[in-house]
Amino acid sequence: MRPTPIPPKPGQESVWDYPRPARWEDINKHIKVIFNGIVLAETHRPKRVLETSHPPTYYIPPEDIKLEYLTETPHKTFCEWKGRCSYYNVSLGEKQATHGAWRYPEPTPDFVSI
Image (cartoon, rainbow, N blue to C red; front, side, top):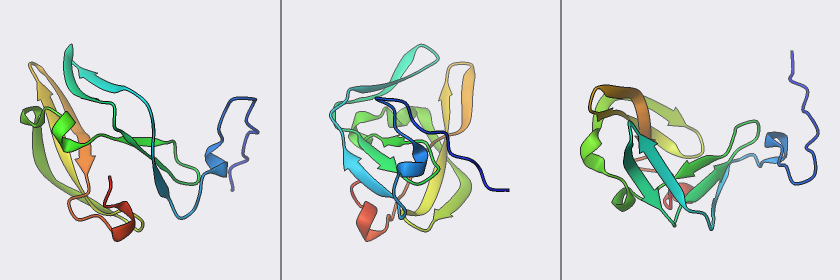
């Protein structure tokens, strides 16, 4: 069964209009990630990745992330567009987000910027 796209309203985007293969874009937004009351990441230089049928994903430069709260896990996946993905648990105080962060340590040439 194929999903039926819902037409976007004015000012909205549709994931069905996003490209295949995926692409990234620089965006002019302030992104802040707060976990357990602590700012985990904050940037004015995010990248946004768009891929057909997927919600937009925002990527934050590593230097704008408090990496001391991340612990790499053995979990790995592979994206045909972006490459091999490594996952991290996020731990702050009593709270933990399993696989709450990820990165592409050796991205494909088209996604080196993320």
